[in-house]
Image (cartoon, rainbow, N blue to C red; front, side):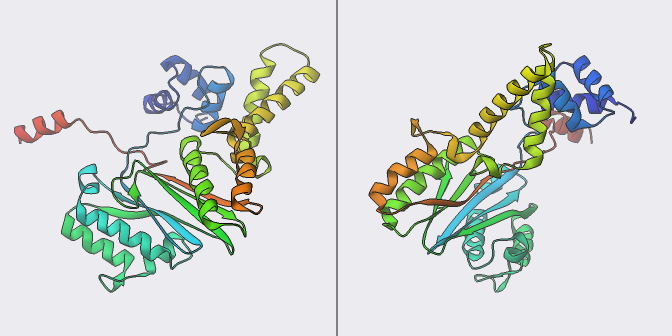
Length: 308
C-alpha cells in the first residue's frame, strides 16, 4: 500500500468536499487509489456523485465554425483571461476554427494545417503568437462532426464574440427535411446539451466502464440497507435505469420543455421539418475541462517580490 500523504488527503478533500478524517480513511481503505477513494466516499454517502474530480481553471477560448454540413469546435488555451479578451488572441482562435473545418477535426490535423494569414502551420502560427503576445498558448482539443444530408447545429454559451466563448456545442442531425426548421431544433438541442452535459446520445451508448463504476457504487450503497440480495439487485437495477435516463441525451427531460424528453421533442419537430430526424452525433467542449490550474497567492507573490 502506498503511503497516505497530507497532500493526497488535501486533494481528495478538495475533489469531494468530504471531511479530512473521512478522506484519510477512504485513502487507507483503497490503498491510496484516488479514484477508488472517491467511489468509497460516495458509497458511504459522504461524497456526492456530482463532485468534479478537479477544478476547471484553464483560460482561453472555445471557437466554433461551420461550413455546409460540417462543423468544428476547438479549444485554445492561454495562461490568463486577460489574453483571452485580447483581440489578437480572439482573431487567432476564430481563424483556427475556420481552418479546422477543412480537416478531419483531430488536434494533429488542425495543428498541421496551413493558417492562411501566416502561410505557416497552425502550430507554428501559435508559436509566433506566443512570441508576440508574450504568454503561453496551446491548441488543446478539437472535434468535428458532419452529415451527408442534414445539419450540424452549433451553439456558443456566453459568447464573447462571434463564434467564440467558454462553452461550445455541436449536434449533428440527419434528415432529408427542411434545413431551416432542422437547424432550429438542432440549436435547441445544442442548448440543452450545453446545460445538461449528457454522457451519450442513447442509454446503450454510455461508456461501459462508467456504467460499471456507477453500478458498483449503487451495490455498496444498497448493501448498507441490510436488505437481502434479491431485493438489493432490484434496487440497483432501478437506480441504473434512472442513471441512464439522467445521462443519456434522448431520455433526458428537454430543458426548453421539461414535459417532453429530448427524443419526444425531436419527434414533434419532425412535423415542421417534414421528415424523420436522427441524432447522429454531439460534441461539447467546456473551456479548461479536466485541467487543474495552480492556485497562487497574489498578495504573497507581491510581498516576495518587494523583499527581493
